[in-house]
Length: 183
Image (cartoon, rainbow, N blue to C red; front, top):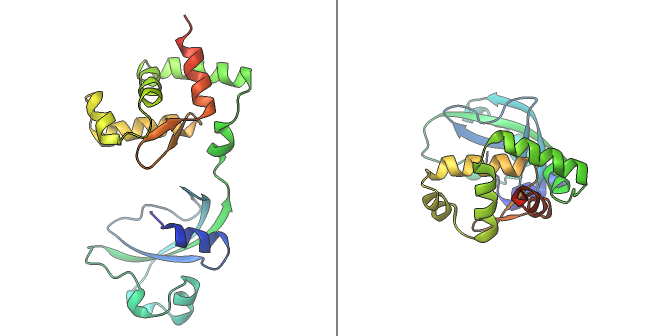
């Protein structure tokens, strides 16, 4: 579920705690969390509702002034009301700065088990920061979606950071790459 910066800021400030979406199938579930560029959200409730049952209170909770602002879309699917709350900062941010030697060694061991692609991708991102994902994917002969999925695996352990466009290595990613290069 993508949310714009204005909406994310309002959720963090406690001004918004409801969002609406039209989905063929929900992309979040009740009790789950959602990592966003501004932190982690708790997904408190996901419920399919009729658009006509949206109340003025719902609009206020979603930061909307009128029914006209409510999910104007031609998309096919069901209408959902999602109740959210700001949980806190993305734990990957702190992980990017974790340079503890033992932790880095464990990370390197994990990457070796995951395969050679890990070092190849880290080296590629190191050598070509701020390059569009499609260009990077083409350079390793991968579909963009598959390429991005692999980069997300590296991001999950604090090794990369997303940019617009492309990626860069975090301080942790730089240290890990340096250790992986050693024979």
